[in-house]
Length: 611
Image (cartoon, rainbow, N blue to C red):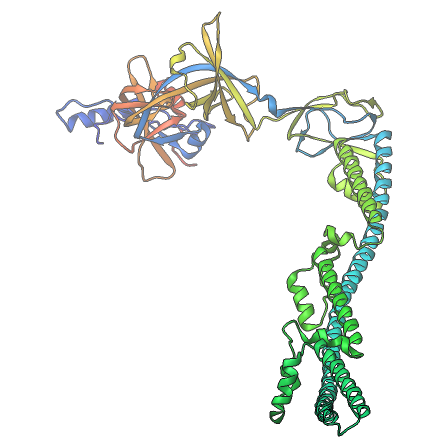
């Protein structure tokens, strides 16, 4: 921007500020010189030139002319309040005597920091009881482990013995099977021999009977012809009767084998073909029925009875294994491979968790009783530990007591939150109880701003709020409405609302008054400057622009009148007088205005001359 300038040059440097004063005669010369160069009317612009030292002393700050959104805001007032949940009252958890005080009123503390130390008799007794309970628990642990190891080994031995019994019964059954086969073969041989003997005897008796019948018939004929005497007939009749009786006896024996007269006649008829006697036997119900005919048959019956007993024993042993939880697959492996499982790979606890195995113990109640006692001791130890924790002992302290067996005589009172101690009611040597208030601690890392509004309709949760306090006039604290009261102040006809603010730097203090700007909505961006850069002199509104200069020693500031439009709590719209990216003064502009309006001091005759 080019201007026809009436330059007010300030040539005398103020002592201490470095501010250069106006020179009216020089300015008039410049104005006359400028008017001689142009026939047009021009704006009147005033310029100040500051040294670097003057800028620093005044505290000049600038900002750019830019397009910014002018928010529609509602302003109100409020006050800073502490958040109740960030306030803590410290009381002891036990009765005792204060032995050492580490922090006092006004000190800043961190959560968990040591405040003071107490001596408490009840806590010392509690620790002794805790140590005693730990010792008892340790003894029970050792006894329980030893008993479990012995019980598990007893279960393994019993399981192995049960498998051995089953395997032995299988071997016995096999032996009985083999004995039956051997005895059956022996009985068969004996029966075969007996049958052959009977066959020979029957053939002999049959031949004898045939001969006796022939002789008897011949004698009868001779007697009838009176060739032979009656005595001869009687003799032959006796022989015939004897032969018939002998044959009947042999036939009876064959009948016991199931061989009748027809089969015997077949032997005689087919004698030339040598039919085996076994083919004539009726073995449909088994040849075992013939064992009673030989002495070895009794032995076979006994062996078969033993086999049935062996089968029953195998079945009983197998069922015992199944009842103990032995899998059918393992039982099959024992039967097939003739090997047993040792159960050494199975952990003691796994064996003892099987209720079926517990029945194998000689005295399972002993294990059950020690388990119950062990769990009761654990429960008692846990309750005692929780009691000590509730009294304020930390896990680290309890671990230290457990490891060393030594009690802690002084107990620490720690800060429950971070903050500042705002109240102290402790004295060295004082006796305190659980109701004694030792400290009050306030944390202001976050605060509330409580405001009030006359029109409730624009109050909405989540609305952005800009907060300012007089202690930091150039700083804006941003937050959102997080609570709106359901009650209305009947006297003021206002509604209270609350804004939560982050206060990590602890600049805001409870009790401060605050100005609040609630952002209702945002408009489109317009050319705007910070609100505090625009000044008024009763005639119009103006700003100071920082001009671009080549010198780094001085800086020029030009007063420019502006036309403004809408504004909010931060920015004001510039409708004319400035261009985008101009640099305006936001702090120190009042001092610049004062420098322009103050009377011109006398000129130092030596100013600007070197000596």
